[in-house]
Amino acid sequence: MNDTVTLWRPTGQAELDLVAGSGWRAWPPRLPDQPIFYPVANRWYAVRIAREWNVPAEGVGYVTRFAVDAEFLARYPVQQAGGRDVLEHWVPAEDLDEFNAHIVGPIVCESEYRAGVAGTGLPDGWREYLAGESWFRAGFLADGTRLTVFSPDEVKSTVDERVTVAEDGDGRAVVLDARTGTVTLGDARYDLDSFVKLLEW
Image (tube, rainbow, N blue to C red; front, side):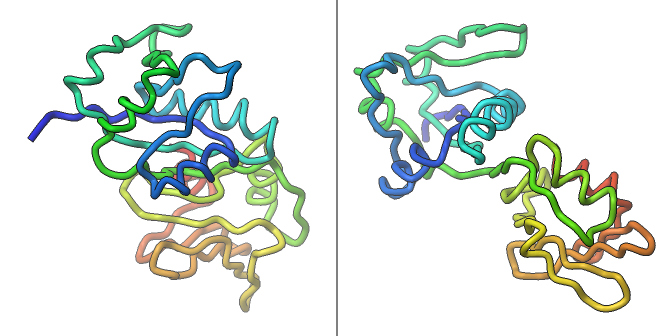
């Protein structure tokens, strides 16, 4: 079995829809003004681009993850695109079909970020998180747990000042207790700041 390298790519809605249309197996052809395809070598950089570029431009940004055959990828050495850890591979548009043929496994949508939204009736810390420049809408936490965070319109109130603010991949509610500022996720309890840190990994 060949070795693979994991890469990430920040993307907007239109490109993600085309990837989904490929069965999560290929990147779409570049537009005429896009001569290079830029997958990135580290997750944090992909998150930064999705949040700082895609979200302001479109209201939503995604981070995708995929594996590429290492021997093939060696044709496109890592390029430093800014800071020391800002690393990309530069794949010419005319090579993209061959690049796609060397993707191993599916392209995975790892996380989704949304533009800030106003909300009322929510605990202060949670309302402030959702109203920021961008917030984690859905994806995988560092431990592999899949989570979907609700917008203020989707939040479900329960009894005793508890609100369901998200659900995990198994449909279990993630509950924020407004009285104590604690969030229950499965068998674990977090203060609100710690829960936000889980989302922001």
